[in-house]
Image 1 (spheres, rainbow, N blue to C red):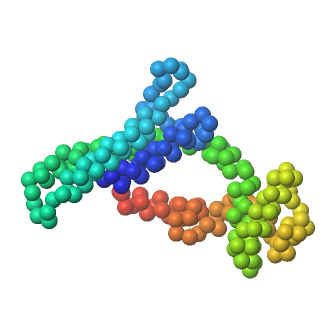
Image 2: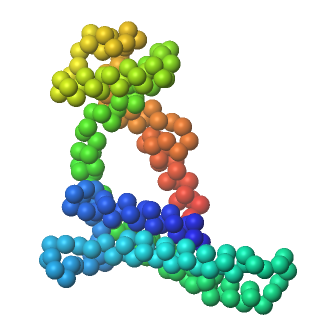
Image 3: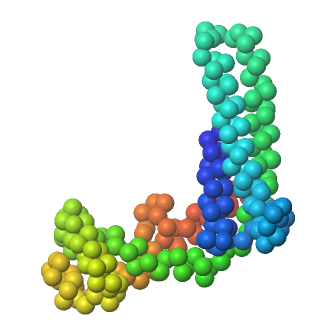
Length: 216
């Protein structure tokens, strides 16, 4: 129970950040938020905040159970009557949290334009350039060093990766060729992430389908 609730707490923290004015990645429904007592324009992400807070309750219950058992012999003792309250409280709290959390997620709207804009920093694809060099036979340690120098050049010259000419790339490493610019497309970079758990659209869609079937 505690491990699952810990994951809910971490997801809650992400959602709290994402729905802030500074991020604006998601909008929660009015049913799962409340207004601020001071600021009329503010929506408080109540469900996410309460879920994050209640994770401490389950951690406390777990510690209580571990402490209860630490001094007992390997047989039943009446001390173990004390395990019921934290156990049942954890179960009830988790069940309620999962139900309301599912409702919150179902009513959440994603601001696709805002999330896409957050990926505009070309430095996000620096690792993809390093991977490109590795695929062309450059050892990763060397590729990492090359891209580090390239990043420093990009910052110093205020030149995004896509605006640096091929000839300049080849000054950093002769392994660069014209197809390096394919790495500088976010869609291409995501599609290339095919390992288990990687964020390619294909992998994400497969995981969503898998868990929808498992939970239906």
